[in-house]
Amino acid sequence: MPSTSMYGPPAAAAGAENAEDAASRPSLYRRRAAGLLVILVALAVAGLFSVSFGANPMSPVRAWGALWERDGTEASNIVWTVRLPRTLLGVLVGSAFGVAGALIQALTRNPLADPGILGVNAGAGFAVTIGVGFFGLSSIDGYVWFAFLGAAAATVLVYLIGSAGRGPASPVTLVLAGVALSAVLGGFATFLTLIDEDTFRALRSWGLGSIARTGPDETLAVLPFLLAGLAIAILLAGSLNSIALGDDLAASLGTRVGRARVLGVLAVTLLAGGATALTGGIGFVGLMVPHVVRWFTGPDQRWIILYSALAAPVLVLAADVVGRVVARPGEIEVGIVTAVIGAPVLIALVRRRIASGL
Image 1 (cartoon, rainbow, N blue to C red):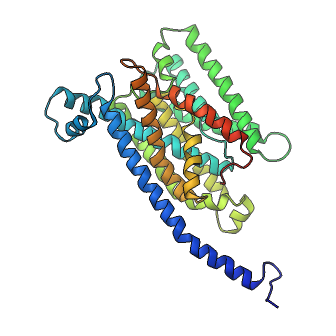
Image 2 (image 1 turned 120 degrees about the horizontal axis):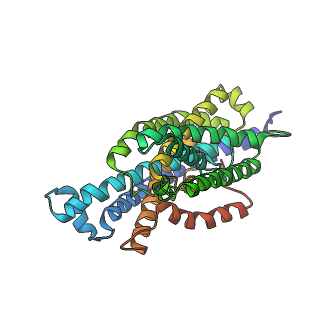
């Protein structure tokens, strides 16, 4: 008779499970490495297309040459002064929104969470509207602090609304609270822009989500905050794996759950608030990308955050290129393109019986 344990399966079965896990581990590592290589190639291709296409399209070969030979020609000037800064901004804000979405999903254990759906982007946007309308701010380095404050306030408020009543906040109540708060804040922001059109003229187009109107100096002003948010997210990855098991079990494993949640909210505030200050908010990136990468990485938050930081810029740059090509010589804002893509994805995720494991 095989030996058994009071708290587990027979020893032979446990040994077989351990052997199976050990055998599958190299396959998982290979899949993760292969997926990482694919993402890096896709990011390079998306970046090359981003510097190639626009109102004055050029071949990728010519754009590649202009990147390496800054010789004062028209192609070189377009690439270096317009398209390369725009591409780098797309990479930066894409990483910010993707990692912010991965953090929110891990902290709330909610597969439908992202900065847009939970009202973080709306909170940052509404706060910026207040800063522009009532304090006369006109530059990003001035109203970025309003974006941070609005993002943090919206994050806390959504959790308080979702947890009101009996029992802790559930994924469904958090989503409903976030959608409701986004609608309210968006309505107030729209009302303010309508009663004083001259003051908010530039802000109306900013709110659509675009990477075309932000200059290198404005990007550099926000860059330290985004890098700080990414650094905090990387440091939190191990704790997030424990929190995914539940707060009680995470605490028993030595994780300081309260500290991890506070740092997580801080990272989301820096990432989503800073990126919204630069672009006006790009929806659905933080929802779609963590879900897709989780199919390749499994539930390990360290790999999810890494993949999201690299894969989200691919989506942002691809949406930007599509917006430029479809409406040439004009363009469609990135936020509109990602919304067109993201709405069907959200419906599909809601209809799935089992969401991607967290």
